[in-house]
Image (cartoon, rainbow, N blue to C red):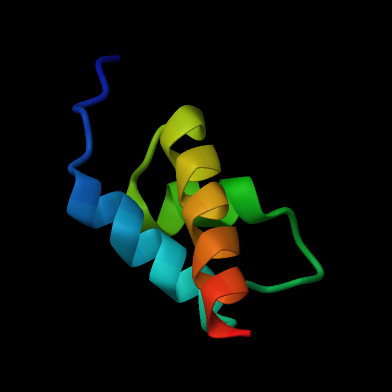
Length: 59
């Protein structure tokens, strides 16, 4: 099975979704991001990092 690389906008969309509280906090974030946005595990982690930056800039 081959995964197609996601675009930066896919990662940014996932980060924004995460930063605005879209994630179910009772479940692990990486599987939710992978399922919702079709990202790889590494891309999901990049989205989490970007989400943390978005939240930090908001304070």
